[in-house]
Image (tube, rainbow, N blue to C red; front, side, top):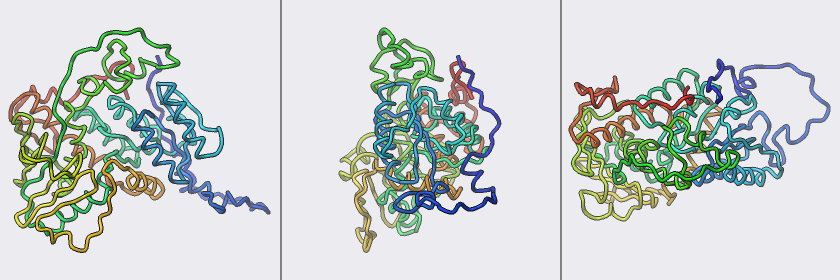
Length: 432
């Protein structure tokens, strides 16, 4: 088995070009492509990328990256050969050549000096470890969510990204979707009055520790089952896992599925009340609803089903949120629509109708920040606090009791059992 050790970070190609001036003699003829003319992108402005994990969601996000000419994918990585082959065809079709490579080994991607950044869209079990290894190898990272399975992994990921100075964008694209962004602006502007309660829709909470029946493993060159499992505990192969039925299984999931939607909706709630740097201090489960409270008294309600148990969040689509102030409220969802009370809060607004699942603006921001070395909306520190809030809520639900959390230490107060649930072991040798 390959040891997952990454050498000391050295600047990547983009940072080297950005920080080093090299005096050279000018050639007499310079190709238009070298200057970025005739619809091409100059080499100095290109961002060379690798894609890791390219199932249905990965291909959707990859397709978005490929809209931007400066995004130059040179390799795609997936432990399922069919996925890699499909993604290669997508890249080659955009580039008009057959140059995109394929691999089943993400370490090959991280080891390439010509790659500036990676897109990670594996199953959840791999997100944190892949991001940590990429950051140590000097790569910027766009990672699908949930970005980590545990409170401890959230801290490890954020600390590593910060230590190695990487640009990171969590795939919580609703931060850059217009109707959600406008709802946040209304809450932050004071036009709702004092915001006292924020509401985040979540999936039905489930936790499954069972194994599916064992089936014969395919040839490793078709599906590498050991690499598919990665840091998750070993279990026998069943094709249903690789076709998406890993969801809901504790070994592969984060927070009893609370993070499936909560990574987005709790994230939006935290943004609305200016809580990106903290978490609630109390979490109390009540059936499929979890009530949380911040230190300043603002309430967060994580709820499966309709708003206040009635209706369907005004038919706003999936992942709806609501922000209540003492002068009004606002709701938004994946339909792209937004509803307020009073309705006058939307006077003169031009929101558009971008779906909440559309990562176009989110990917654009990531690429811009890779070039500028700026900070993304869903950077690793923002991700960390949102995920910790969700994971703490899930632990309270699993234990069936009220928990108190210290947001600075990210540990539960006087609850040893809850604190043991803040981390999980990674299966050897899949470690950072």
